[in-house]
Amino acid sequence: MSTEVTQAFTHGLPKAELHLHIEGTLEPDLKLKLAQRNHVDIGQHTIEEVQKAYQYDDLASFLAVYYPAMNVLQHEQDFYDLAFAYLQRAAANNVRHVEIFFDPQAHTSRGIPFKTVIDGLYRATVDARALNVDAQLILCFLRDFSKESARQTLAAALPYKDKFIGIGLDSDEHNNPPMKFARQYEDAAAAGLHLTAHCDIDQKDSIEHIRQALEQLDVERLDHGTNIVEDPDLVQLVARKGIGLTSCPLSNSFVSPEMKGKEVLDLLAQHVKVSINSDDPAYFGGYIGDNYYALADKFNLTKAQVVQLARNSFETSWISATQKALYLKELDAYVATH
Image 1: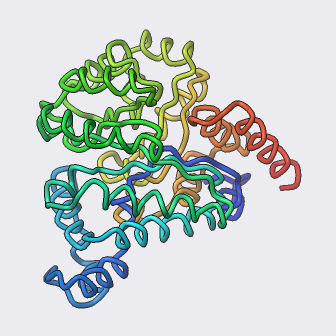
Image 2 (image 1 turned 180 degrees about the horizontal axis):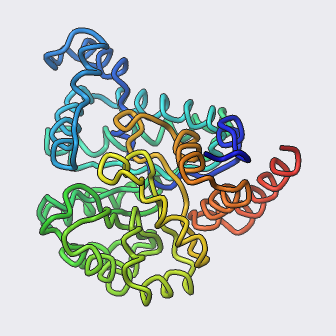
């Protein structure tokens, strides 16, 4: 148990959030409200019933709950309400900058136009400025869909390139290696977009997937990715290139009892720019401040280690050097007075 770090400290710490799925912030109360508003029968009639449905013990059982829940998202206003509800929580956690994942194929495959999705989300990011939160969007490909579906998604998205800053890769990794999407990554890079990719924890072929993402897709960040500790050569590579890893302790705890905390500390000690994030907070029991605190509490982190994690989050974000310097100055000021 950490004696140096309190929950109030981790919540108030200025930080960036770089691994957050907007669909994973669908809280039971909002899910029920949207179901009623859009006349979608979700088979649940109270918040308690929705909460009971949020049960899973591995990636497959989680996705089986996660994707059907999205049926309540039908209109631009629904996507706005989803994003703005998260952004208010981000502000309460003193998230100063956030790069939000969204999964257009999870919606276009249900007949929802891409424009509906991105317009609603983007409008919320603009309004978040009033909350003093800087918010950007990252379009993710669902890796268990075909590469042709990814191609069509990128083609549909590029006319809206002013509304998102990069691409990512998520969903079921089994038999869906990063190289499946090499062409889409090349096209996105050519269009000036930033690149990241999920390399989930403890997957089959974990190290091979991490290697593909780093050496062939040329990603600027790795989402999760803590299995990299199994390959010292790749650890040296990310440390040398300043590539960020985005770890999510509370969601990791559903797969690994140790939250991958030992790996995070190992990476920190090797000067890898690992950061802490909340992944799908409505489903895994905590927003970003809770994730920082859970890790600090279980692994007895020092204040300096927690601050370094926050520093890494700004340094590996996709913002200008000037913006980074301003946020890091704010972080230093917070630490000096706490």
